[in-house]
Amino acid sequence: MRFEWRLEENIFRLHYELRHKHYRHEPYTSFYITDPKVRHIHKATVRDRILHHAMFAVLNPLFEPSFIPHSFSCQIGKGMHRGVNVLERMLRQESHNHTKPCFALKCDIQKFFGSVDHDILFSILVRRIQDDDALWLIKEIIGSFRSENTTIFERKGLPIGNLTSQLFANIYLNELDQYVKHILRAKKYVRYTDDFVIISEDYTYLANIIMPLREFLANRLLLNLHPRKMTIRKFSQGIDFLGYVVLPRYRVLRTKTERRIFRKLHLRTIDFRNGNIRQETLKQSLQSYLGVLSHANAYLLSQELQNHFWYWQNE
Image 1 (cartoon, rainbow, N blue to C red):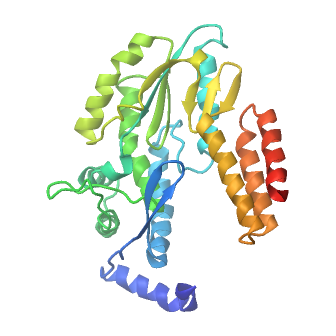
Image 2 (image 1 turned 90 degrees about the horizontal axis):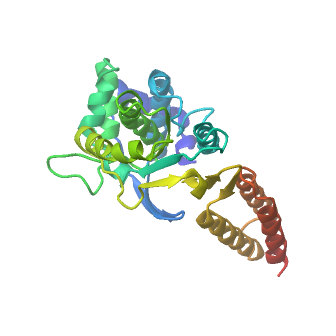
Image 3 (image 1 turned 30 degrees about the vertical axis):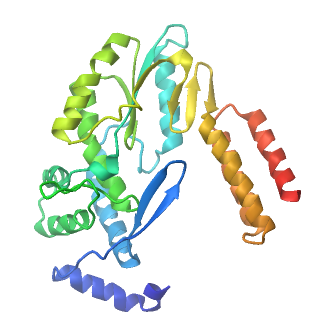
């Protein structure tokens, strides 16, 4: 509201700073959220967020055509549910309509956003961007944040909260995507931010590519696979991806996700009873959670959630 009160003046000041290269990114406001694990969020000022959106509008069309089709984060027409649908289709194809065994290697990159190396990211961007003014501004945005992993020799980290961070994450991990598709020649591969799955009917192939994946990430991108979040599972055991577990012939919600939905909706009803939110807002929360359930075989769970909702609302 303060920015909009003198909108024209603030926009012209930002334009002047950019044109004369006086622009400096302002400090972030940080806070923690738990959803479900603790995340340290860094929020930029309104002035800087306007610039982030402008940068995204210019850079995303430049880089998005180079992304593989099965990278699903922060792209129009994609997203989490599309990623789970594609994973399910790949598993069905590899298992020949659930008639043959197949396996999925699921990996997660350890502390990804805090580990992105600024120099490596900038070297990737320089390959496609030649304009000196644009590179100056990109370097200012990237350098506006440094994680606790930063040393005097290595500047690291992207702030969770910036729109530009989502784009830079896709650009950075596109290097991994190209390696997996063209060097490891994985035919069935899907990635959402730092979570990715490779599917094959050959267990040995999946086991053998773990070490090359580790080495590529460590040597090329200075990243590490999370040791406790790397698994090879049979399709019949269920493949856990983006909050859902995909099984032959059906899909269920991850147990932790299910518990979180019930807990958060209960807290929302308490807020309503205490007069902190309106009934319309409460009903919107219910519809949002029912929307999540609609992407799984969860009719009975949806009914149970609605029954709890009406009970909590009137208890």
